[in-house]
Image 1 (cartoon, rainbow over the protein chains, first blue to last red):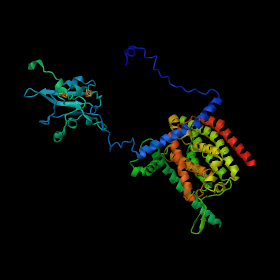
Image 2: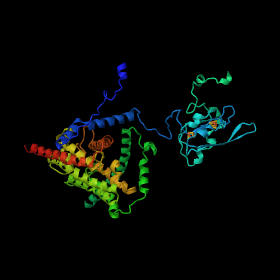
Image 3: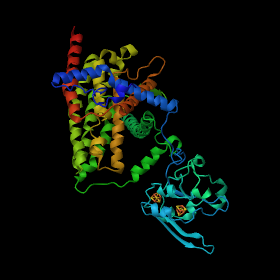
Image 4: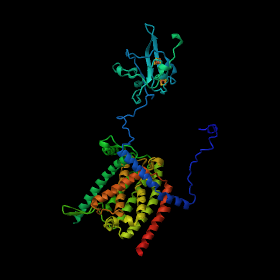
Amino acid sequence: MSLEKLKNRDVSVDDYINIFEDEYPKTSWEQFKQVLRRSVKGELFKGLGIVLNIMRQALFKGEMQTVQYPAEKLPISPRYRAVHKLLALLESGENRCIGCGLCEKICIADCIRMDTRIDENSRKEVLEYTINMGRCIFCGYCAEVCPELAIVHGGRYENASEQRAHFALKEDLLTPLDKLKEQKEYSGFGAISPDADEKIKKTPLSY
Amino acid sequence: METAIIIETIIKAVIILSVFAALAGFTTYIERKVLAFMQRRLGPMNVGPHGLLQLAADGIKLFTKEDFIPANAAKPVFMIAPIITASTAFIAMSAVPFFPEFELFGYTIRPIIADINVGVLFVMGVASVGLYGPLLAGMSSANKWALLGGARTAIQLLSYEVVSGLALLAPLMLVGSLSLIDINNYQAGGISNWIIWYQPLAFILFVMAGFAETNRTPFDLLEHEAEIVAGYATEYSGLRWGMFFIGEYANLFTICFLISLIFLGGFNDLWFISGGLAIVLKVMFLIFFFLWTRASWPHIRPDQLMWLCWKVLMPLAVINILITGFVMMF
Ligand code: SF4
Ligand code: SF4
């Protein structure tokens, strides 16, 4: 692109595409001619041809759009923000959450609620952790803010259930102990980027 | 002799009733499937293999659904209207010869219930009486959409009826008979004898009128879901609604048989294909064509239909008749 072209801010003048407008028939004779022209031009039959072609492609070339939904599911993007998952520590199977409360603070729908206490080792222990899925807007802030990658968004998007209580049980969300070896480090929403190591800078404390 | 004819007629009537009622049901399945393929969908899949049992499921649903009659409806009319549609659709079939004559146990069977010598007139007349069904249904439903649907029925009836009658006149002048069997026999000499070659304009006009008569898509003003919810059938449910549609599909078959009999050589043998099969193939193709147009063509407005029928198609039909008359005279 030349400099002049770049400097030309008046983009509305050139390269303007005029939408072609039909000339509407005014008299009945013109109307009749339009009908005749359109019938002779065979636009209708062109339409028939297109539809038949689509049918041929669908039937014989497998270009069917239908997904047999419950049996067959479309892949969703890894960054899709579906129902939360609470990840477990790989070493112990314990919940990763350190009870910092950041997610509770940041949640704009005010749907995370947690109870903590200081345990015997003067560490924070999470007693209750609930997410009210009826209020959650799936904004992803909680997963973004969590320093421990304890709360992330999973891929379970079929949220229908008979009871609200189903949506907030920690047992449903936390990786169960026997499935621990299948737990993958999360690459979806809220995960650190793959090149996080390079980006990270040492804090002044370690000098 | 008398009793034999009566028994034969009753048997034929029962066969036609059951075959076409079943076919009407099956056509709904075919329609859904074909339309689905034309839109890159699968259509019914879950009930039975490829959704074949969907028919039975729909039937059970229609039979067991509540028979709903709105509070302010004109009750008797509301209840009778679907019966008019369904019964006239089947009555019209009584003068249609479906197949060539064949012999069964040394007894010649003519697959027509009543070979009356005004067959075409009878079929067209009864079929257009069938439109009283939607008309009365729409007027008696105490529902705005239904009323609009009923009004559109009247518009449609006024539009196509004159075209279909005039379009048929020219081929009838050629044949010189109103009996569908005579019309069929007129085209006995193979493809080159088909009336469509002598009367292409009449063929096109009649097919267009047929679309309007069976209210298929470019002209389905009665039940235009996009504009008037479900038109005349808005308040109907269950079996009464089903009867409207049995009638509509039966009408579809009648019109397809009429088109094939009058213009496409009827049940005469086609090369090596025997007559009975030939007409079935023609009817099947026509039905497919009806579905095909439903998938591809847009609707038109009621005023456009009326404009088209009265200002374009009717003059064309009259000109066609005049030309046919002059050609026959000289
Ligand atoms: S996704 Fe948003 S709304 Fe839902 S719990 Fe997390 S922060 Fe709250
Ligand atoms: S932000 Fe993470 S670590 Fe902190 S309380 Fe929430 S889930 Fe636990």
